[in-house]
Image (cartoon, rainbow, N blue to C red; front, side):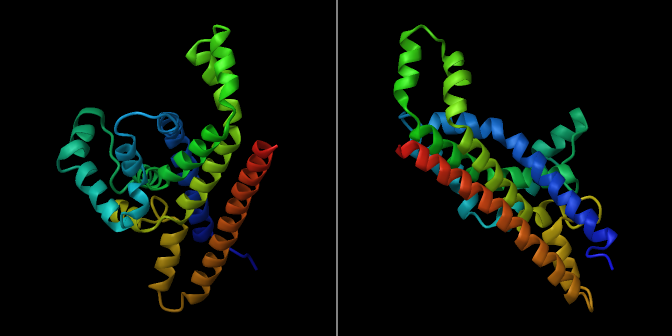
Length: 229
């Protein structure tokens, strides 16, 4: 007997796809934001608050805001559809957008912590020797922050796998298009006799979340121990 049905496998693969793309799309912006927040500048507290906003904003409210902004009846969503043929609402790409925004603070925080823990003397030495800002970024800053990049990506990936409120509000619950694991669990609970399927998918979600979070914690622990030496 198969552990997962074809529909459940479809939801799992879609979840992995959406989470992977969301992390990849958000990472360049997370790196740039973390680099900025690792420095002192006017308005830093405001920017930090904006970055952390998805963590305290109700996911359903965030999904509604995305629907207002990227809906095809007007606003930015209407402009993108009319001029570029880009549609987010009720598409898996919309689920990517919602997941990327929701998990963005996780990536920024991990990368920022890694940047702030690095030895700034190496950067100063390279600058004294004539290395440009880009050279120092590529050859010193990013390699030293690599554990934070990986830990942030893993944590964001795990968070994206569990995102529910923003996705169902923004892109609905469409089989094969936007029905991720959390939405498949919700659907099973709304179906008579679907408790066994919901329990099976919940167990799978818990196992995946545990594995990814354990990996992130392991990387961060090694980073902290290395920095303390």
